[in-house]
Length: 370
Image (cartoon, rainbow, N blue to C red; front, side, top):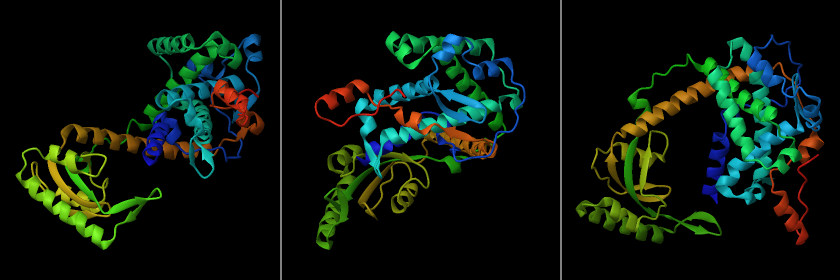
């Protein structure tokens, strides 16, 4: 269960750069005047010029400064996120309880609101960084919009008010957002030393000193710990003789994994210190941590590819931190207003499945249209 939550959390953060930034819907100050927009940015803001399109927007959902987001645009965000998560976990994911009487749908809706808010604020800053879109970028946006609409039924297009203009606007705004982000972070320090990013790879055998009782890990008795230690000592003797430590580990470890690649500060201290003290091909003694007794074999004391990936991750973290600070300043000039009743009615749940459940005596699911 905990592993599933961790996977969900990682996916949610990874779904868009915007999601990891600070939310701003608590801000109450009025938006200050903005400069004139370039054609591509203005088109992203001015979607929906025809009367037919305007009628198809639905109710107002969120206002971010001077930017108004209507039902059909909000639902596009919902549908994109819905497709992303259901491809991993299926349609039942939304009712998953993440704790504190909160479902995964509640959490995802909060992230969608942050995503919408942040997109509109960043879009307003595009002129300050002289952002415009090339013909190639516009062509890519058109292609993405077309591909997305090809995957939507005519029924859903009509139901949610999805038009080519709206979908193209969605992808255009995402492209402009990324270009603003790149402009803001282009001068970030990209110098990362090998020592700072160093990753090593080890195989390990774990003999646990905890037992699971009623879903919780509890410490073993002293007698049980002694038995576990004696087993670890016996396995260490075998490890010193074997030519295939991984095979021995796979047959005896009580951990879910045998191999780990990691850097400093990523593992429990006792395990990490022992692992980093080894050279390639080295074998540790029995190492005790809060999880149990470890026997560690060093596969690589410098994993080149993993270290390069870690360097990229560190640079991205620096970029995100720089952008987050600047974005925090931007939010001070914005007022965000949410139409609570309309927002509450929007859902990521599968209507057909919920209706079927209701017909079988289940609880009524919230409607997806206001």
